[in-house]
Image (cartoon, rainbow, N blue to C red; front, top):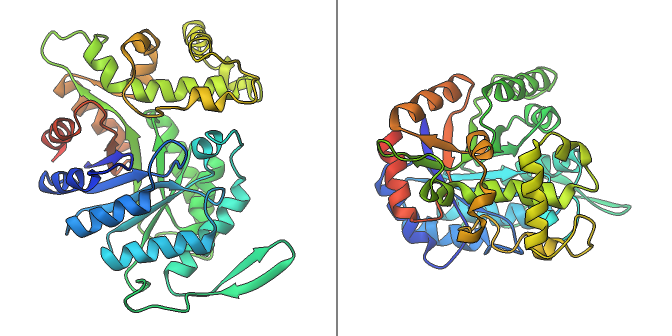
Length: 354
């Protein structure tokens, strides 16, 4: 299985991209969550100049964040800096919208947005709509400004069959966050395949599947629930708890899927952040430091059940066996989000998989 890295945009991010390339990793991604992270297009521009081989990904953008012309311009501009190395993840903007106190966009709008991006980034014209006004648009400048000749890879952020169906119709790959259930991946690939068969696009066009998670390799006799494994995976677990806390009132079915200990962790998180599940400003309390290193006082919220569900923690042999099962389920690339010591964690990933 291939290996890659996901980080948030920050000064010096290009140094991590250089190191990832030196380690032989396949891709380097930057989050697109404007209110809690820096801008991915700025960050990846620096990475494009500093590297020559590694693929560079946006993970992920959304029509709820950027218009199709603006996003396509950013992507095609990156493609001019790093020809043929750009990957664009697209999604409904689940977290990026919720950090604004808003709901994600619809899959219908996502599908239209993806189609427009694919057309524009390939140098084709596309339909652009604002209210009742509809116009055909295309890049009016090419050459040194943007690159529409080299292909850009598109992947769809998915958790269920609806978005996987969009991926099938648009001929894109898949990317998912913390989804370590092989059975769920088989279902996603089936949904994508069935939708692709009904699409005029080539149903057999090559597409890749990416899994975003966190990784901790245990030393011999190390406690899998100790402070170090919790610190390395806690950002992933707290992201789920924040989502559960934020959506508890509007989507009680999600909270009902959690066990009693996990529901208590959601309650504790709301209490510690000084907010409630119905407070209109709860997004300002739940999402600061999103996907950042957790505070020591929050280690108790990093439950073993959630670590096992969302993250990869185990001995080298245990991890390789688990990764092999995921590969059999159709995962092409494992993306790790390091927060404790990124250079060391990248080297650990490279040693495990490359």
